[in-house]
Length: 197
Image 1 (tube, rainbow, N blue to C red):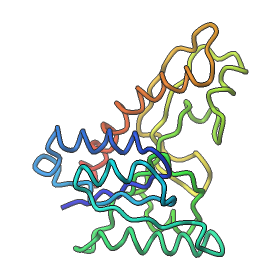
Image 2 (cartoon, rainbow, N blue to C red):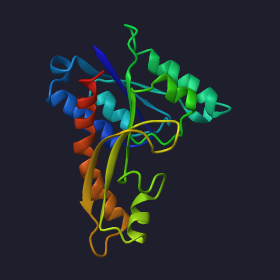
Image 3 (tube, one colour):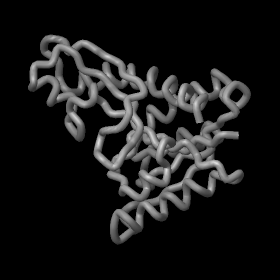
Image 4 (tube, rainbow, N blue to C red):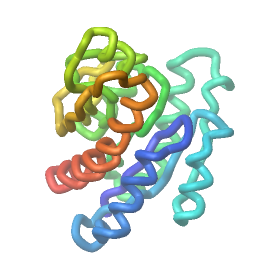
């Protein structure tokens, strides 16, 4: 069985979309895969409750309890690897996980670490993507699922979705429109990757 470990920092709406898709599409039977755990770096992450209600194991590795990024990433890696009973590394899915990961952590999960970013990469890596797209006069915006590399918001693109930037759009309105598409493309990209690993 291929285990999926999802990392979150907040509400976990993309995590919930992946969990719903895994259940509806019977990934256990079709893809020999399951969402094994949801791990948050914040104890108050609302998505943890969503995961528990779906019967998924949860854990918290609070980044505030570690002296530096390396120590936090080592503890996070140890928690993820607990969900690897047969020696096969888990597919690690970042779903609103608001931490920059160290190169060693990224290398450990090379080819099995993916993220979703709320822009059409390579445009607008980093934060405040929706306001930046509006400020630059973009006519379209969107979301990108990509493999994670040591460089922030880079890596092989697995899927993208495009939405229009409407006249008078606010960052919040655009973000809501993009998020709807994120919930569609992220589960699809995860399922497609599971067929290749």
